[in-house]
Amino acid sequence: MSNPIDDVPIRDSMIRLGQLLKLANLVEDGVEATELIKNGLVKVNGEIDDRRGRQLHHGDTVTVNGHTVKVVAPEAG
Image (cartoon, rainbow, N blue to C red; front, side, top):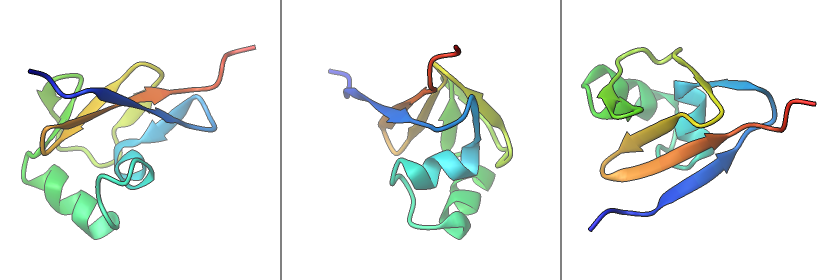
């Protein structure tokens, strides 16, 4: 049984991985985000990513500790 994916709306067309982890309340602060990413515990679109500054765009998914969120950017208009 898979866990539901939560949408995380962002203001702009892009957000960095460390910022998204904080916005989605997957971590308490940037230090925790850095540690999780550095230790290979964060997946972006199903693959481990160790770049805290990784740019995420609409539709990208991020998984931490079995919890997955999806980036939802404003409509391009």
